[in-house]
Amino acid sequence: MAFFTVFGNPVAHSLSPQIHDAFAAQHGLGIRYLPSLTSAGQFRRAVSDFFYCGGAGANVTVPFKESAYELVTHLTTRAAKARAVNTLIPLGFGQLLGDNTDGIGLITDLRVNCHQQLNQRAVVLLGAGGAARGALHALLEQPVASITVVNRTIARAEELAQDSQDSRVTACAFDALAITSGALVINATSISLTDKSGTASLPIATAELAKATCAYDMMYGAEPTVFMQQARSAGVTNVFDGLGMLVEQAAVAFKIWHDVQQLNTPQVIASLREKL
Ligand code: ATR
Image 1 (cartoon, helix red, strand yellow):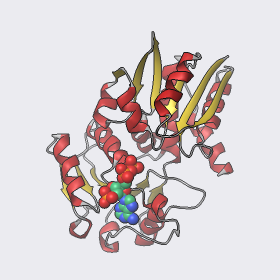
Image 2 (cartoon, protein in one colour):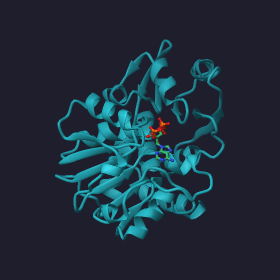
Image 3 (tube, helix red, strand yellow):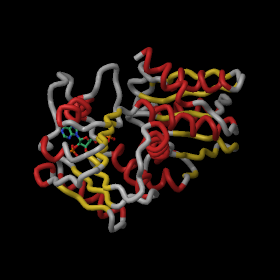
Image 4 (spheres, helix red, strand yellow):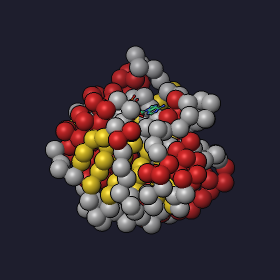
């Protein structure tokens, strides 16, 4: 039986094993997918041991995506742009291909599950960390009109915009943010993780947020995230969390590892939603 894992810390909460088991069941495949808790000091060793023992593929989650990017012998173009790896594919002879399926997972969720049009859309991307970088490069593959990167530390937003080398991208501070009517606002900050009280909010003027027609949080949880609550109070009609992105990024990895074309992702999203 082929075995798979997800490396992370913490990782016990990861839904990846359930998602991959559900996809495997759709195709009648017998797989074993377990979480691997590791540390920064042990990550490299844990990955090489896993593949030495015959592991067929692995996912990488927080906080090891950048370490995985450093460790692989080969990178897909999208992983190179994101500077982070969430999917490891063994090539044999100790060689590892690093891919990043987060960005395409986001785009698929936005387009297919959330029914959002990206053609000529104004996009506001909140955050300038690793999650925002991956999202930015995937969004730039789409015919969006503009992407405004907004961050608490403006220098990081400016660096991301400059690195993208795309004239559609500009950087902006929260207090200077002017949202275009009909914009899509994506939260790639980690405020939901860093604010344990669940009471903090992003410093966006309600009148500005109200101009958006969709607010999407790359985080998810049993309850609406801080950003989702903020968007709903501002009157934004289409508000989504990132559970669909999680399932869609997993679907891309599953298709690569198992060479299958079709997966019923809405079914898996619905069943996970019930159990959150
Ligand atoms: P990740 O890889 O998950 O993106 P990260 O690189 O630590 O993690 O980035 C976290 C992002 O969330 C950053 O954009 C951070 O803003 P700063 O660059 O100013 O630190 C943002 N962030 C985290 N907590 C925040 C908060 N309470 N308010 C606003 N932005 C926050």
